[in-house]
Length: 80
Image 1: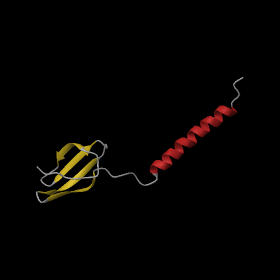
Image 2: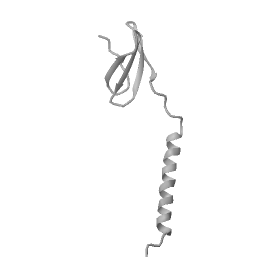
Image 3: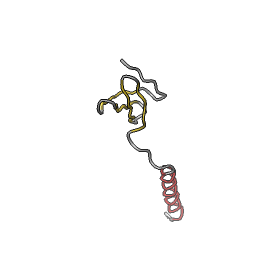
Image 4: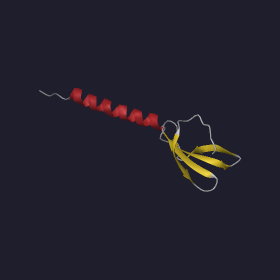
């Protein structure tokens, strides 16, 4: 048995992807790639590429603008 220490949450699933590669996923909902052999293993990164920086902020700003527009329409409409 070989233990691999990481700063991540524990892995719950492991898939062998060849002789020298393991795909591991756990409680943080992200799959990681580990490469190595009996001499040692190391994490080489995530399986999926992260979104480009700022993409989440732009989407959040877009949603905020949408709700502002909806709010303005509600205020300008006369319901009487």
